[in-house]
Image (cartoon, rainbow, N blue to C red; front, top):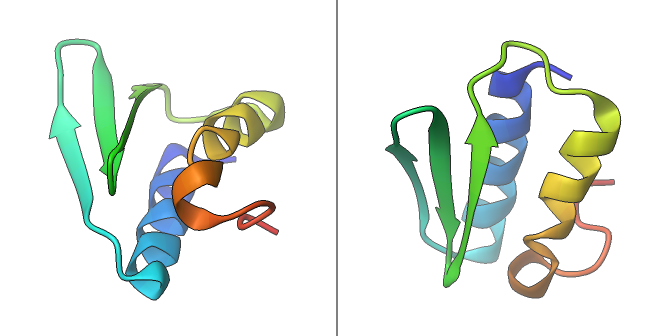
Amino acid sequence: MKRRAVLTKIRIAARKSGLEFREVELTNHTGVIVGQTRSTLSRHAEIDDVTARKFFDQFTNELGRGWWR
């Protein structure tokens, strides 16, 4: 999955849930903040599906179970 697609999917889900979405550029990663949950995503152009799913799982408390489907 493309990195931009991962970030866009989270941005749209946060907007639908009425939560704050922020991207913060760090040294080697991009920090993603949705509501009160923070996580980082590496700056690779392509994110493998397993990593993308684990990244999406980190926002389950904010966006609900299975929100990425």
